[in-house]
Amino acid sequence: VWYARKLETHPLTTKCLTSGFISGAADFICQYIYHRNEHGTFSPDWMRTGRFSLLGFGLIAPVVHNWYGFLTRKIPGQSIPAVLKRLFLDQILFAPLFIPTFMTSLMFLEGKRMDVIPAVLIKDVPDVVVTNWILWIPAMFVNFRFVPVQWQVLYSNCVGLVWNVYLSWKTQEK
Image (cartoon, rainbow, N blue to C red):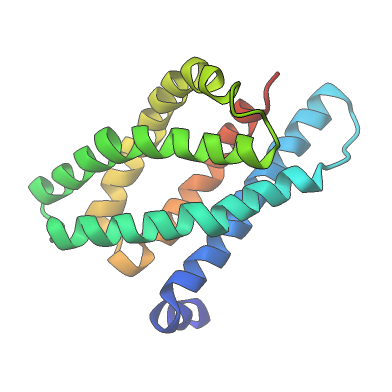
């Protein structure tokens, strides 16, 4: 009830705070799994978790909030044809553009040199986009078909917990 009220009174702020928390939590979970499996001990990298939280708060939530709003205005309804059109635009247009945006932003926050970022993107983005489709196409079908618009970013953030664990691992692998 409290969260639903906040979505009504402060939709973007609520989504930003939620996304920041979930993105940071996903990175923390990824670090925990890695350290437990590789080292047997766990000492979190709070700066890394902070970068994921910052991107969830300042990049993911505002962009996705506006993107879903745009899609809903341009292609309203929850009929199968409307859902498939939004899904197509989301996964064929938006995802392949947003994934490298996120990865570039993360590498920038990590202090990576700008001249090395394109090579990392060329190497990693195709695999990340295909993995994105495996998870997000069915998830977004459910989102666009059954989830009320005001709850779609929260639903995406919940699925995004799993996605961000993967993305954290993929962007941090050596």
